[in-house]
Length: 418
Image (cartoon, rainbow, N blue to C red; front, side, top):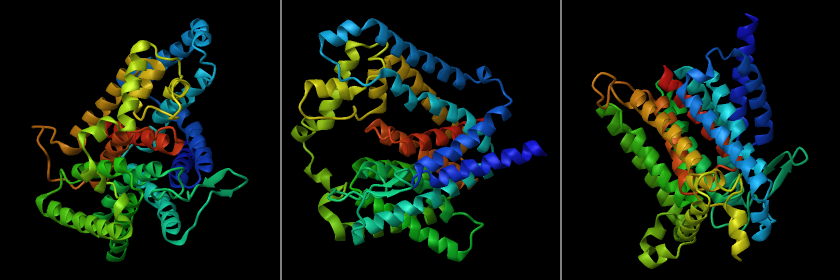
């Protein structure tokens, strides 16, 4: 009985962490830490029996080895190339190794569909402050940064930006957070347990999320959202499918109409009409990716020892960039191609196996239409959205985005196990 009650405290702490993740990440981290302290003694399976855990152990070993060898063997290289502005290579490990443990520990709070639904609802409520502050920033000039608890909580509310940023540092982070949360808003609209009043509220919130994603002017978030939508409507029964499609089309076009009325020039899809080959070749992101491949080829096996794209680029160029705008490229630069490949396979296996569980009939592997498992589909869709966003940009280094990513992967891992 005591053990069960302690686990319930861990579950409450975990969901409070999700609820506060966007608006108060420091306090959210305290709740997540408490939930992990409770979770690990309760884990009964042997980690090495899980192939996916073995992948993570190999990745951790490669990352640490890369940092140690770079520190020990390349001092002459650093001095010869005057690369003294590097950050300490081991600091970069904190972006990865603690989150691998979060992936393992959080699974105990996402064991069944009801627990995953509860986590999704916590994310819905946790996104509402982002929506409210975004409206305040865009329409009522609520500019920041706003500091609370002596700087432990910062709401950025950027002024003079091309798009809505809300609580986040820039519009791309805000767009990614809203786009990743949106599938759970979508799922809530088709929840049979809610009454007409809550369904109306859910419809309005769906519109608001899409509307504010467009106001961020983030092309990354907009196209990730389209991918997420296409996934969400895959397995629904024909009747439900038509209803959901009509509802989302209505919500989407209402959001587009208001966005066009307010800010046509900066909308993400209006830039498509201005695309041409020359513009694409000269795009800064394409140049960054091209340079990144060159850095990878210089040290393909163990990378630059936790040193990312920024120190090397900023030494060679006057225009400063903070990262390579792609997580697979950044991982290859930091820890080598093998590390990036293993971690990519790890994520790919989770996506493939969970897709089969959620969307396919196990007997003949065809799309199943009979089950309306909207929150499970939302879990998969949100995972795809956040992964796509980080493949063509790097939003992972905001702890709110990285924690949310590993929570979603932990949920998919349990969907595979069920």
